[in-house]
Image 1 (spheres, rainbow, N blue to C red):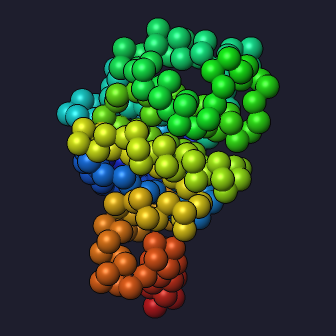
Image 2: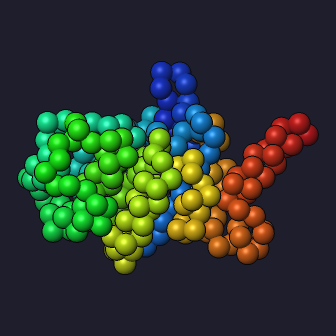
Image 3: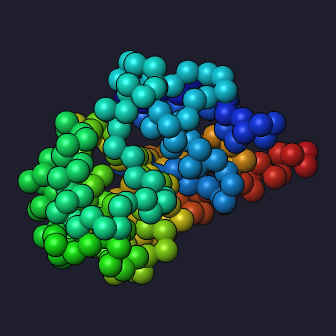
Length: 237
């Protein structure tokens, strides 16, 4: 489990995350949603141990988040940072040498599923195929928490569909969880178990997606907009 207790993060004097308390358990696909600048990427980087909170505590499976807890997390950045002269095969070999939980056989299965050419150089791939490669490298780690920052950003609908199908097929929810941010809410809503809404660094709500649909008769986008509207009205009162 990932637990955040009154976590606050400042960049200089700007508060990016404001006193968030939250628990994320194994066996769920969590969607962290919110408008631009709401703190989604910062929250993921805190969970991944890439940033330290200004105050508060984050624990991952009982350990305080740090470089040492990164073994519990596979993090997919929204940045494209792979060596362009590597082939996909060479990238798999590199990841296998760096991460003890990296499953090369699983990686090759995902490559086949996503119709990637193992001998293709990273620098020669289209943006869509580089997005697929990033997903291969993340899903092939047997870490308890897969943290995906905008995995569908800038990709065309067919690529997004194939990546989403890969996410469903190759994640073992009996011992893993997925935590992702995305603006493609309509496309991912069907696979999300829990929606978490942020606004200006604050936690606005957390609710099972099924409950949002069945009890409130809303999509997750409508639910998010409703929470935003309620806050605006409370500030006017």
